Length: 258
Ligand code: BV8
Image (cartoon, rainbow, N blue to C red; front, side, top):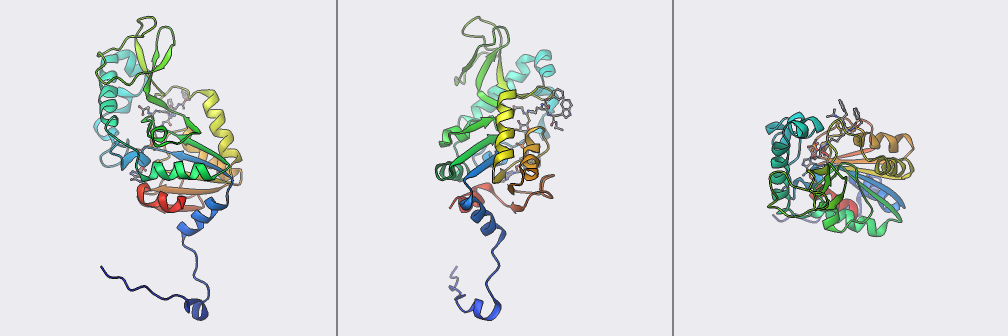
């Protein structure tokens, strides 16, 4: 569609300088910051084909989290829980980072102090090339032995229904944080510090309902940071942030990272 280039050079003469848009304000704050913290959720991976948890076609619409993402569920029926993770691993193995992930890689190269805090367990930020990543809910490509505690990367897709530890033969579990389980205290402390010390916090693709991760936006805000939200829909954080950009992360993030 031909869109005539509108000459705004005389606009200022008549109406004064054009007000910057929320996106321009957010991009400018990010460009000026040398301490940035980012919190991502499943929404940043949605355009890569990774299902989100809540909302119209989210995983929790089909499954009950208490049946799959709790230590009780795993104790009750470990093969059922593993079947869910085998399915997710197979699906995520076919998914690749999207422009939103790439925008964060580019941003990290430019910002002196950059911390990427992710609730996602899909590993797409690392695959995209992000470096300083805090995976507060773990990583589904890592397994942990329930007997000897050995932790290692396991990317095979055709694992047995109940995978066994390569060291002791004990039963393995996915190295992810389930509901009712505490987050790794060192990782959470690092995330809290990054939120408390940043000049700008960028919150991307999270429904902001799972604690303590979602609360990191408030930590940043209360510490005086400028907080930007990028999400498809409003969240409990939307009232508190300085700029809330509604839309697809894959479209908005490259504009913010310019
Ligand atoms: C803890 C497993 C201390 C990994 C996940 C009762 C008992 C015990 C605990 C609690 C309790 N009541 C409350 C709690 C605390 C609980 C909690 O927060 N519950 C909530 C549901 C109320 N938290 C915990 O249990 C945490 N641990 O507190 O320990 C403790 C210990 C014992 C007792 C008490 C306290 C552990 C939390 C971790 C849980 N594990 N998953 C896995 O297999 O994935 S949580 C699950 O939700 C995912 O891991 C995910 O990371 C997390 C958050 O979801 P989001 O990433 O936000 O995804 P969601 O789909 O919700 O939203 C996506 C958003 O993106 C949407 O807004 C959508 O609009 C948007 N979007 C979509 N497409 C796009 C987009 N945006 C932009 N562009 C797009 N294209």
